[in-house]
Length: 488
Ligand SMILES: Cc1cc2nc3c(=O)[nH]c(=O)nc-3n(C[C@H](O)[C@H](O)[C@H](O)COP(=O)(O)OP(=O)(O)OC[C@H]3O[C@@H](n4cnc5c(N)ncnc54)[C@H](O)[C@@H]3O)c2cc1C
Image (cartoon, rainbow, N blue to C red):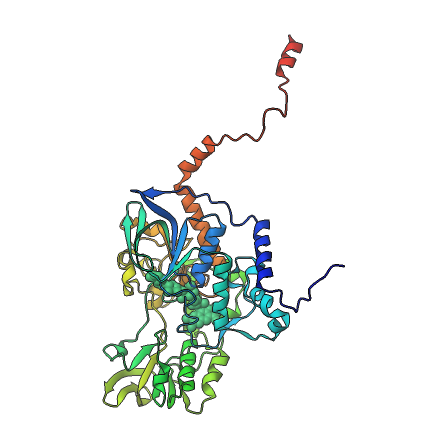
């Protein structure tokens, strides 16, 4: 009798991992290593270094390994298990995304969150699950990394990028130090991409004890009994406001410039494989139009996060409340708004991130040379110029940077911008969960093609040198001598 396990019973991670290993074997993955080894002045040279081991860095590293590009390493400044926002500054309770998204699974069913979840808790628990708790998403990413045995080193920060002949030299600090040489560099550096926090001008000069950016580490316990303001009406605004309220803040005001809350999640509404694969192929004017429209209409905060705030009687949504100026004095902060002056003890700026490459020291050597959309790709007939869009890097077809002036920084062609800053050129395939596998695929195809092209002489020499016979010579008899004899 064959025993068929009930699908509602958890099979356990060990069995899931066996199934994954078998699937990989069926697909002949990982592919055999094929990139010729290189060294420089006796120093080893990596084929690819990935900076960042958050979700994008993991997907990119996994795809490289599966493609047979194995002389690689990913570095992350964060300790293992604390990469990305999930266990640090993400203050929501669950992901916004539906639980069914296959995220970084790279087309492998056993690598999905769903497979990982049901292997441990069964399908009934899966059916009962509403949204994915953020900590559980991090646990899944930790498993993803382990089960694929990805070459990641934590506690290592990249501090500089330099040119070294035709190679790239990066400086690293932390658990490993020193220069590292690599042929290709992938910047999977996250939502702050190549910039940093977007901080409004009115906060310049205000003491940091009075305010924080939503992605800062914030001591919410210290806000107990305090009057708190949060700027914005996005997901982070809600989650920071809710966290302050839950920590016992005396009051929390959401200062929202808009007259209405954004209510419709436009891009999610039209999400499809067409958008994923088509957006980077449409003419630039269309790319601009899509991003401009969604920037104008804005993404609403999740309903659950909004209710998490509004259930508190001491929370206020102040719409049409733009900030004119902020001053600090002996009574905390005095905020001049379009609705009059307001007093607070602390302010959280949920004001997002920049594409300003000059904002991060590790990119200072390449920043002046990076071509942006403002450098000619944008033309006024596309629509109004938004700084956040105009500053976006003008990338090539595989996320590679382009030079602002040809010949000034050729190594940019070997540095790939696999983070949120790529969105205007590539669509949403290098930041959010839904299409990160498609993004990793696009990235790694490009890297594979460029490494192959660069080594084409070696590959040809390998072709010429290859002399293992497939036929041993005993499979046939040359009938020509017989034929000649017959014809003689
Ligand atoms: C609060 C929050 C909630 C989100 N919720 C959702 C959601 O529900 N659904 C969805 O689809 N998307 C969501 N996103 C968007 C997106 O999925 C996440 O931002 C995701 O973390 C992106 O992955 P990433 O790898 O690009 O960046 P990250 O996860 O941020 O990883 C980047 C990594 O790079 C490392 N790093 C950066 N610079 C260096 C350096 N110089 N040297 C070494 N390491 C470096 C960092 O330590 C970090 O670990 C959310 C984003 C945020 C901020």
